[in-house]
Length: 257
Image (cartoon, rainbow, N blue to C red; front, side):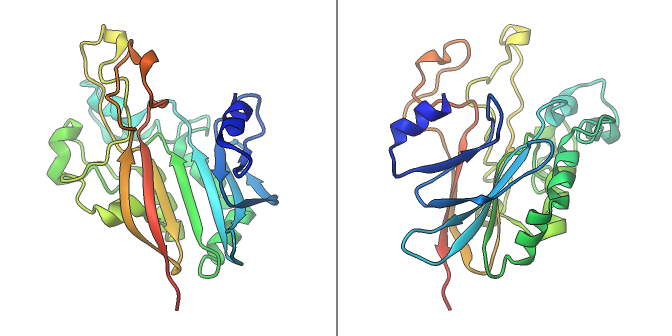
């Protein structure tokens, strides 16, 4: 299916995916991917390549992410039987070591990623994708009523940003999570079918574009879902927009000395 999609985009697009029968991470660009720089974490949750910008000598180290989706934290936060934050956070790093914190730790240990962060003053680094977890910047005291009363420093984004200096481009442009929550999930599951569409899903911002470089400066960031009204499950078959996540778009300026 991915190859069919790529064919529709046209020959001017370059791409790379995770090496699986059903790839869940893809990097697509109209620039040129250096496939020899491909780096993949052991759990196949992160893929990184160098992208050479057209008509330029500049390079971007680009990393696509799709972190583990099990034990989704905001569901636990809405559960009245959950009384301790430790119960919620246990899903971020479960005993089998396949959780979102574990995915981030694997990325942080990849030598290509370490080198990319070290060289980010020369080669910009962008990390983007579906983290399947909220941001540590969003669940604060002022909006705790929207999160069942919880204030949570979500560890996956906190760990990645504090260990690397990566910056959340959306929150840099929209620093107030109350005025601009920027929710990206879910577009078509407003009410869960498990309860006959009677209980609303908790919305949250779980898709991110992070960057690190003095050469990049974001000047616009927004969520996008096309121009047509999105129909909810079970009527989503007619939707023009193909995903159950909103897309995140960030525009950067390339800074020159």
